[in-house]
Length: 117
Image 1 (cartoon, rainbow, N blue to C red):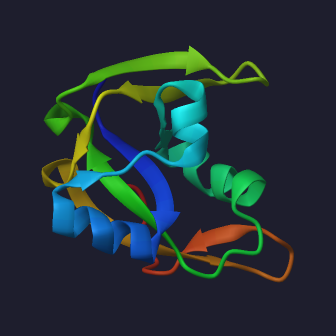
Image 2 (cartoon, rainbow, N blue to C red):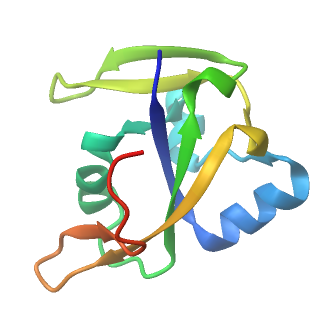
């Protein structure tokens, strides 16, 4: 798998990861047995569907070539293929941290204004 992937989490979870060197799995990740990731084209919709109302979100932009664990594209409940990580996500794989903000309509945007990686 090539290109950038995204992991959405709180800023506090990112700070904890920086201290430990590893991004912790969320409750949903633990329940499903893999770390949920998104492509660039999926990240903002993932935020809208699963993180509505959250004010403290960041999207980790991850270099897929730096991920040590197994990455697989697998279908979601809706049938779209999403990247799933079976293993640890080291902070060394993170290219940049992109703050997210929710708009009045419930959509999300990257606060840094940057486009695709």
